[in-house]
Amino acid sequence: MKDTLSPLRAFQERLLETLNPEHRQQGHILDQHCLWQDDAFNEAALELAFLQGQANPHFGALLDQNRSGHGSLAHWHQIPCVPTHVYKAFEWSCIPEAHRTSVFHSSGTTRRQTSRHWHSELSLQLYETLLLAWCREHLPWGNGTSESGACIFLTPEPGRTPHSSLAHMFATISFALKEKMTSRFLGDLSPTRQWTLPMEETVRVLSGLDRPVHVFGTAFLFVHLLDYLSREDRQLTLPAGSLLFETGGYKGQSRELSKQRFHEDLATALGIRRERILCEYGMSELSSQAYDLEVHSSMHPEPAGRPRYFRFPPWARVRVISPETGSEGGIGETGMVHVIDLANVWSSVSVLTEDIAVRQHGGFELLGRLKAAEKRGCSLLSADLA
Image (tube, rainbow, N blue to C red; front, side, top):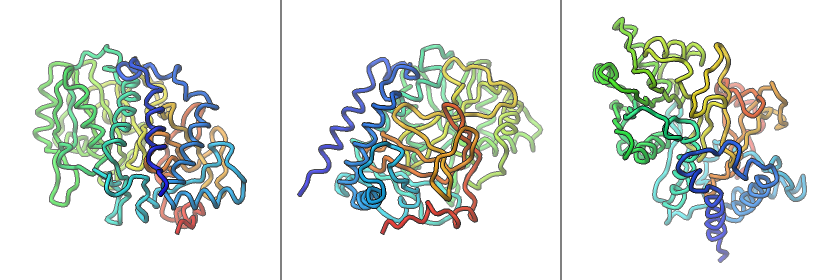
C-alpha cells in the first residue's frame, strides 16, 4: 500500500520552515516571505495538488479530468476548482479516519447538511501556527505596541462549540495572549444552538472598561448588540485605543447592512473610530484567513467611504472567476472567490467559495454570497465528482 501521508507531513514541515522566529512572534511577513514570489508559490501549489491527488481519490479523479484537457499542470491557475459543496457530499480529506481528532462544520444559513473539514493533531498545529503568524501582522499586539490588557469575545466559550472553526480561531488567539492579556467569552447558546449575547451583561462589561480592549465578534452578533443599544436608547464609549475585530457575516441571523453602514453604526454606538474596526474573512473549509489590505498593526486611517479590500497571506492566492466560464476576471471585474490555500495540506489546496467579490490591485472586495438562482445556473458548482 502506497504511503501517502509521509510526503504530506514533509510538505507541512517545509511550509512551517518558511516562518522564521520573527514571523512567529512579531509578524513582519508583508514584504519578506519567500512565498510572495510567484515561482516559489507555483512550485509549492503544484506539488501539494499532486500529493493530495495521491491521498484523496476524489481529488485524484478531478486532476485526471483536468489533465486530459490540458496535459500536465504547469501553473497553479490550472488546479481545478473544488467547490465547497464537496465538503458536504464527500469526506474530502487526506487524513485517514483513525487519525482524525476533530472536525469543523460550516455554519450555513439553513439546516441542510453542513461542510465538514477534518483535522488531526498535526493539521491543527499547522492551522494554529499560520493563523497566529498572519493575525499578528494585523493586530496591534503583534508588534508590541498595544495598550490593551484584555480581549472580549462576543462568542460562546470554545468548549461549547467544538465544531466551529471561528471558535477555534478565537481560542487560539486567546491562548497565545494569555501572558499579555486577559480573555473573556461573553456569548451564549440558544436552545437551538444558535449563538446569542446576554445583552445586559455585555453592555455592563463594555461600559465598565477603563483600559483599551479588543472586542472580537461576528457581524450578526454585533448587529444584535446594535439593535439592543438602539432599543434601549444607549451609546457606549470604549476607551481610546480599543479595537473591534469583526468577521463571520450575517448567516441569516440578523438584518444585513452594507459594510460602510455597518461600520458607521458600530463607530457611533460603541464610541470608536472606524479605522479601529478590523475585518477578517475566513471559512471552515479554509485554513488561512484574509484581512483588510490597508489596515495593519499600525492601524492606518481608512479614507471615508472606501471599500474594505482583503488580502490572504503569502501561502494563499485568490482568483475572482466567472461562475459560468471559469475564466479569471481583470481588475474591477466581479466573480466567485477561488482560493489556493497551501495551509490546507490535509484537505484541498483548491477551494471554490460561494462568495462574490470584485478583483482589486493586490486584493479583493467582498460583495456577498452567491444567490440561489445563480447557484442553480453555475456550471462550476455542478462538476461531476462521483
